[in-house]
Length: 215
Image (cartoon, rainbow, N blue to C red; front, top):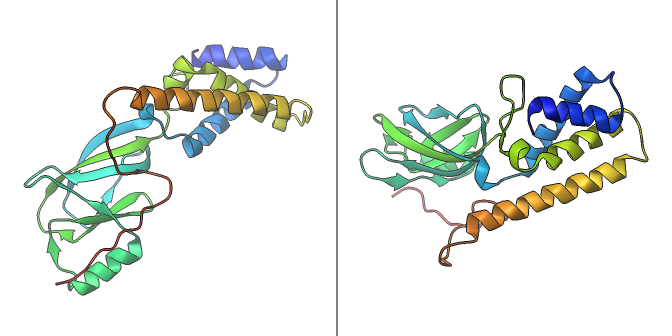
């Protein structure tokens, strides 16, 4: 379903022709909700960046880190820490520079520790925002493979806007059903083949790790 087809379908379901500009808002609201709730294989991206300072800006479509690793010099993964842990590390090591070992997320930046002593190439693997539908971007993986997610999500937000209380539960139920089916399909596609092997979780309950800082 294209952006134009989606807007037409929403208007037809609502049986309204006076909500043209509002329909864009309903679609925006669906995309905001999907970016908060979804973490699927089609949202995974890779990017490279040059790290030569303490802070590194993340890509504009960044949602959540999966893996950060140095690909120049010796190949080396970086371990995510809290901002407080990085401060402890810096103090224990007299704020020395060197090849980064740890990183923390600070607003829309990655903080590296130690601060790079030279330029390093980083590979960032991350969950990206769903590309927003518009006149210039007429489709994305959700609208192509799961148009009902967009449709029922927009109808849910439209019913809230129009204060049609009796329709909100119906469209909410359909939206949640479509969203769950999409999640399960993505999960099956991502892990349905290949041998079973142990792997580290990338989200959910944080595993406890102990790190020793200093000499």
